[in-house]
Image 1 (tube, rainbow, N blue to C red):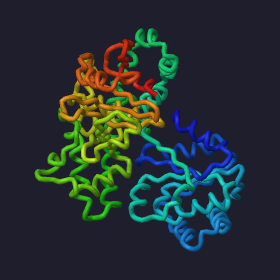
Image 2: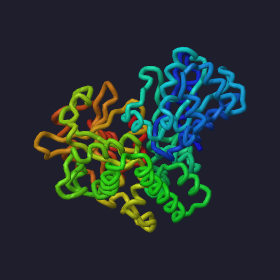
Image 3: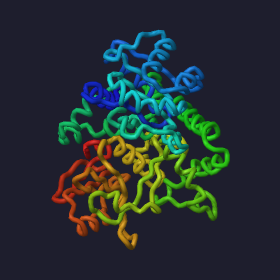
Amino acid sequence: MHRTAMKELNKWKVKGNKKPLIIRGARQVGKTWLMKEFGKTTFEKTVYISFDNNQRMKDLFSSDLNVERIIIGLELYSGQKIDPLNTLLIFDEIQEVPQALTSLKYFNENAPEYQIVCAGSLLGIALHQGTSFPVGKVEFLDLYPLSFSEFLIAMGNERYIELLHKDDFEMVTTFKETYIDMLKYYYYIGGMPEVVMNFIERKDFNEAREIQQRILEAYEQDFSKHAPNDVVPRIRMLWNSISSQLTKENKKFIYGMIKEGARAKDYELAMLWLTDCGLFHKVHRVNARNIPLKAYEDLKAFKLFLLDVGLLSCMVRLNQSTLLDGNELFKEFKGALTEQYVLQQLKTMKGLETYYWTNDRGSAEIDFVVDDGTDVIPIEVKAETNLKAKSLKTYYEKFHPRISIRTSMADYKKEEWLLNLPLYAVEVIK
């Protein structure tokens, strides 16, 4: 399976002063596979250690964190000699042994020649529980479900991605039906690696749904297993409200939809838990366009998105027959799937901070505004080919951005101040 994150891992490998690398991401987005594949394809040897329910590793890291002693223990455990130049050390589920996380500081300071890649699904949660974190002594890589371009490659359509990368939109438009068909599949299948691989092998939509359902159930089991008992009921209520939040006209998150009279402070820990483990993406409102946008974010107003469009379509019980209904699929649930899809692609673009904008009166709203460090770019999302864009015009007249983007099912078209970008080409935003 092609993952663009492999390029980032290869860049990390050849860096002169690299630090231990931590891959962050929700469960089942492919962290373990990625680390093992990286080891298999670029190192002579790989030593893989999972810390999940591993008492020996808990014991090894529980006393002093002398690197030499730890390496001897890892060699005894794995039965392999660890040559720092040619061996990749993989620490999986590292949040299960907090002292192992702390040890990365000593590896970085005292033995930087060891090449260590770690992963932790619930890493953010572990940090909020007071884990001694090696600040400044590690590097990070965020991993998400497969993007649409990765999905296209997995489905054997790599040439279609090449056309987008070349900006050959005349040819892209000629073959737009293929892009649209693949996009429909992606809305239904999503980017969870197990679901994608099964669909490639079996081409069975029902089996894809069964796997998605199992993944959703596994996430719910995590609530009880890892979250504090008093927070679990609120996590469940928040989790169960996500589909109704996304399918309403105004996507701003409303606590009252979880339960009548619900207040932000009642669900603060539950929200933190779900965002920290990568299941929810929080997109805050801004009412200015200055850089950095983070300085102008409204922490009380936000939209909430799920980690994967396929899981969302499973939650709302999207029927596979919808895939045959022309472009009706893209209008389903008031464009909820479309906005989810666009946000999911934006999250995979390194160096972009994503927000949404409304004016002070709330009469105009831009679905997303992205900050790449030098520019603020508004992005309006249209679920079909209706191209009325009053809010985008309002934003343009107020702030005069260098470029404004409207993404929809319409064909590519570059106008004076506006770029019409097909939904299947969202990746070229970067």
